[in-house]
Image 1 (cartoon, one colour):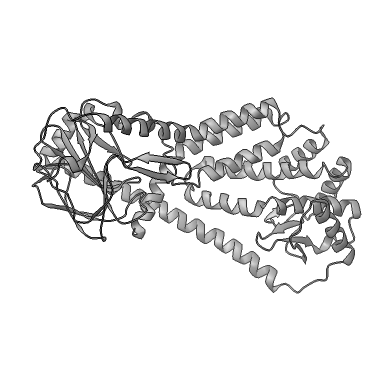
Image 2: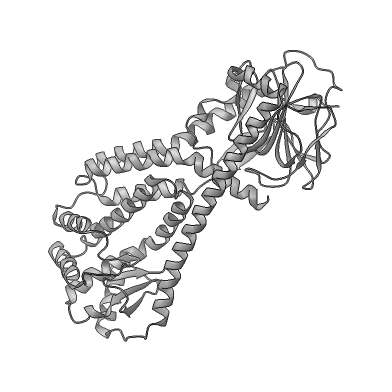
Length: 490
C-alpha cells in the first residue's frame, strides 16, 4: 500500500468519523453541564477516554450512521453504487447513471468532484503538518529547557515524603523529582520515565501536609498514565484539527482529568488540607505564569474556583444510577454504528449466497479477471477481528502488485474511483443486470462511462483501502444478488 493511499484512507476515515465525534462531544458536554455536581468527574473522564479510543481506532466497522441503513442485500432491484468504498443501492439514480455512461460531461463532473476531494485532502494535510510543527516545537523546547538547566538538589525531606506517597498509592515505578525555575506550579512530565517538576521558588513555602497533597495529586496522574492519554488526545486533535468540537473535547477532557484527580486525592487526605494546599500554590504563583504539561493548578480562574468548590462538596459515589444511564447512552451513541453494521452485513451476505440466480448464464460468458491463486472462495469464512468472522461474498485472487486486471466481460464502467474501505474500485455493468466488482486495485486505467471489452485491461492488482495484503477482491452480482464468480467464469 503506497503512502498516498494511506493518507487518503486516513482522510476518509477522519471525515467519516466527524459526525459521530460531534455527537459524542455534544452528549458529554450536555451531561457535564446538567449533572456535574451530581456525578463524579471520574465517570466523565472515563467517558472521554472511551471516546478517545473509539475515534483513534480506524479499522473497525464504519461509524457512518447514515450509510449503515443500506446493506446491499436489502435491495431486490436496481443497480449498485459506491458510497465511501461500500456498495449501495443506486436504483433511484438510474437515469443519472445512464447519462454518466453515455456522455462525457458526466465524466467531467466526476473529475471535478475528485479534484475537489484532492484539494480538501491537501488542505487537511497542510493543517496536520502545521500543527505537528507547533506541537513538536513546544515539546522539544520544553525538553531543551529542562535539559540545559543547572541541576538543583532536591531537599531530602521532600524525597522522603515522595516515597511515603508512592507507598500509599502502591506505585513501584521510579519517579524523579526535579527542581526547576521554568514552571510556576508542580507538574508531571514524561510517560515512560515520569518526573514531577517542582518550582524552585516553592521550597520552604509549604509544610508537610501541603506537599503530601501536591505529591499525591501528581502521582495519581502518573499512575493513571495521564501523559499517555494526553498524547493520544493530541494525535486526535492533529487529525480533527478542522473540527471545533474536538478542541472543546480536549479542553473539557483536561478539566475532568484534573477534577477526577482531585476526587481521588481527597479520598486519601483531609479535604480542608487539600483545598488549603491548592490555595497556597495559587497565591505563590506569579501573575505571569508558565503553563506546565500536567500542572497541579491548571486552567483559568473559573476552573480553579470549580475545583475548590468540588473539593468542598460532599463526596459523590463514583458510580450511580444517573452515571449508569450516561454511560449507557454515550456507549450506544458511539458504538451503535459498529453494532448495526456488524449484524446487518453478514445477514445480507448470507441471504444473498443462499439465493439462486433467477436464470441460467452460459458458462463461457465470463473470464477470471486476473492470473493468480484464489486464496478465498465464495462462502468461505474469514476472520475480521478477534471475536468476529465474516462470510465471503466474492473471491480473492493473490498475485504480485501490478499484475494486470481485465474486464470479466463486455460492459460499461459504472464506477472507477477510490473509497476508504475498498480502496481503488471498479464496477462494470454487463448485460442482463449483471455487475462485476474489482476492489483494492493499485491502478485504474479506465474511466466511468467508458465501454470495455472482455479481456481489456482495466487496472492492476494492489492493496489499497482496508486491505491486509496484495490481492484482488472480485465479486459478481446478478439482479443485485451476490453470486459465486467461479460458477460463472470459464
